Amino acid sequence: GVPGGGSRSWDRPVARALSFVIGTACWAAAFGRIATQTIMTISVSALGICCVFLYLLNHTLDTSPGQIAGIVAVVVLLLFVVSGFTPAALAHLAEISEGFKEHRGGVMGLYSVLLGLGQLLGGWVGGLFAQLWAVDGLIYATVLLGLVAQLTLRHLEHSSRRTAARLERSPSA
Image: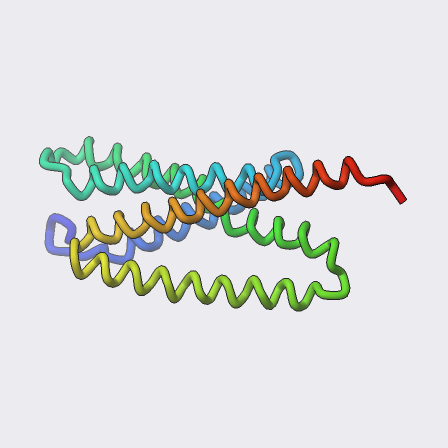
């Protein structure tokens, strides 16, 4: 609540949503100049850093408004960076599907299935961790799933490099 008896429980989710939307709009300017895989890697790395600050916020013994406001400001800025992941992933998918024009619907359908599985897995892991460790559990689950995402991105990067090298070696048509 707010001093004086009022309640502003709406302001936190609204602020998070706004930071995410504004961050996505800012990232839109970077598309085309920065590779989509690079944007995804930066976003997932920012997620890990964001988790550190959320953990600090959850364990702040000094309840001075300045310290809390500083941590919240860093988290909001990091959310700007994290928000680049989804549009970068969609742009990367569009890049991949260019090579499979006749199967583009199937590629997009596969993305939808994977997105749904991610939501299901994220909710399940997050719920389990939250039951075990409360808010810290949500942070731990986010770190764990962020590490999975980071490892997946590294694999994607290595796979892309191997494919590019193979294409360079093959005779052109």
